[in-house]
Amino acid sequence: MNRLSTRWPSLATTALMAVLAIASVHDLVRLGDAVPWSKAIDLPDFYCAGRAVAHGESPYGVEPLRSCEHAINRGSLWRNPLYLVPAPQPPMDFLPYAALSFLTYPAARIVAAVAIAAAVVVTALALANMGLPFWASLGALALSDGFVEISQGQIVPFALLSLVFAALMLERGRHWIAGLLCVLTMIEPHVGGPACAGLFLYSPRSRVAMIVGIAGLVVVSVAAVGIQACVEWAMQIIPGQALAEARLWNQYSLTAILADAGVPVRVALAAGTVCFLVMLCVGLWLGKRLSIRYYSPAFVVLAPAAFSIVGGTYVHVVELPAAIPFLLLLVQHVAPRLRVTALISLVLIAIPWPFAQALKALFFPSLLATFLICWDFGVAAKTTAAILIATAAALWGVALHTPPALPLPRLHSGLYDSRGNVATAWTAIAGNEASMDVLRVIAKIPTWLGLLAMLTISLKEAPEPLEPATNTG
Image (cartoon, rainbow, N blue to C red; front, side, top):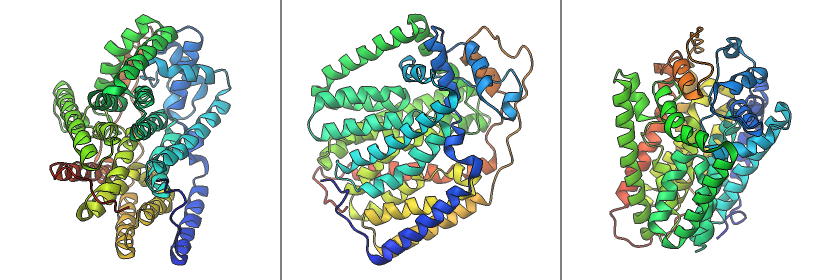
């Protein structure tokens, strides 16, 4: 059932929603130069890598990536000519950016922002067609999958769009289409890979389509950058990226926690890898159990994707939306005694706490998103009020502890070989950047609590008798 137009707010609800919306608009207007579409922090990296591909060069070489990035970027980091940021995406990702590189960068930035915003809305519509409440879905996605991803200029919203449509097709019994759509999530492999594993394992009718789709991606990748660059990505870029960012301040992974606590990086990477594999198995098992319990096949792709960001070796704020479709579906179906806890877990992950810490103007937008989630899931007024008050207090507490600006990395001549690849260069550069500090860790705690609650609730539900739960949405 499509929930887009089946629920209307009361007068009091409308008034509160209007107040929060007006306050949110006022907050966003105050952002000034910090509006997300003016940042698109990672977009220059993808744009320049796409330009390299368009001109028949490797997207993984220090040059021409570094020169292109310096021609586009401004700011203190880019005053040092040695600074660069890699684009460690799989080869097929660069084809759209190759096309985008024929536009000027300001035009490409607008196109990317509009595309991300459209992807968020269409994702919410697809979730509504799975029987989930539209406004709750949009509220859950708006900041983490919208504001953050536009601000970062990221690819994740398109992977999430493919994931949700694959889940929708699976719900409708269109296994071939589900298989092809699920393969498209491999534009973000560490999220798409687990989803594809779940579909391949539990949906035999999707397997041929998935094999065809994966073969197609391999052909497209080789055609785009050549066999050598494809091998370089798999053998050097991916492990090099994980090694480079093992202690970086913006990581949520188990590897980063251990490495920053003094554990040797190689040991921390091994522990993170083991954790990722364990969470993959947990996600696959839970996906099957919950799909049977709730008569909802979508869980077999959504659960592995969600648990791919629990612990692991490489998790950033841009990957966190991978848990949102799973949590929305879980809130819809979960037993009443656990429903509020599941909803709180969704709120904790839907709010980008580090952004709320740095940008005070996200206070009211975060409360509006929280209210939309509670209202559209039919949460009682007193419970909604309690959740809003607790969220406001947490946002206020996080915002009071703004960390100082990160020190500039100490870069010097000879730090890396300008003729080498970006993995080696980024390892040298990131090793000179700041690691996690206490104030930045504070902003990650709500998300970690949300992920822990998601895991706990899912494990608590899975062993129950395999029978359909009452729809309490």
